[in-house]
Length: 168
Ligand SMILES: [Zn+2]
Image (cartoon, rainbow, N blue to C red):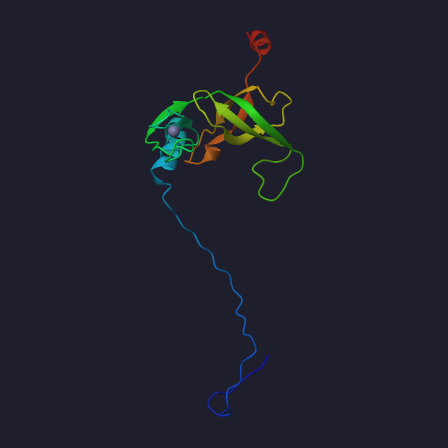
């Protein structure tokens, strides 16, 4: 490392070696989710209900809500409750954990088309052999909710009629 005494060094300046300062910058910030996403997250947090946006042009219902329709580009300004049950449209099994995974492995990612919706919601499910295309799932809401998609812990299989009969 070079040291200098600037008050006595009158030599012409030469380009310095690169100077590095080590440190850490942390940014804590809060931002508005906006009306559309805020309506969705607020309904999850305050009512444990799932909202979709309704297209003013073609009537399509998008979940999570969008501000415009991806099919006809009309505004989606109204909201409608959907689900809570939905059908698995696609799924994949996560066998090994990875950094910041939403759950310890194994678990499943699922695309769930909720009753009354025209789009599918990407979410989580237990690694249960009943979680396959065509299965009916329902959301398991957390008791303490903070206005995030994780207010739904995951979607779990509906009990079969046989299981319900056994429990009665
Ligand atoms: Zn539309």
